[in-house]
Length: 119
Image (cartoon, rainbow, N blue to C red; front, side):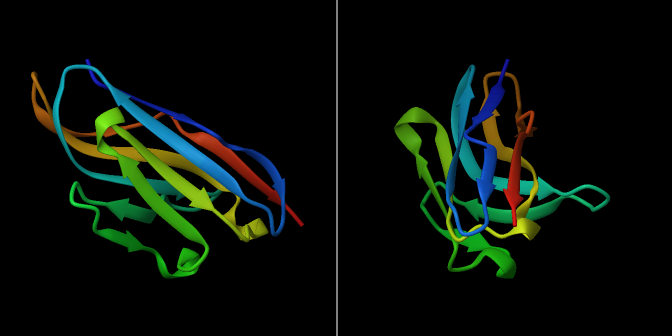
């Protein structure tokens, strides 16, 4: 069984920084694209950033220049470094991975980690 476990969320003041981590575990054969999404209260879940197995990255415009996504393929882990945080970045952040396991090829989600940015 595959699991994605996030960590690193918390409360931070505007202008501060946080680093989120997401580790995938289980009978994993290959991880393709990994990413971070977020969902603020009353809003739809939105893509924040993605990274391919080859390291190609993509960001939503609102975080470009402030957030950086990276991954450690040896550890099956993806990171999101968030700088210059704004109150509008407040949301539950979800890790996502499209991967192949011994059971299937599918997209998996983490349980989410809360990020709160105070003004």
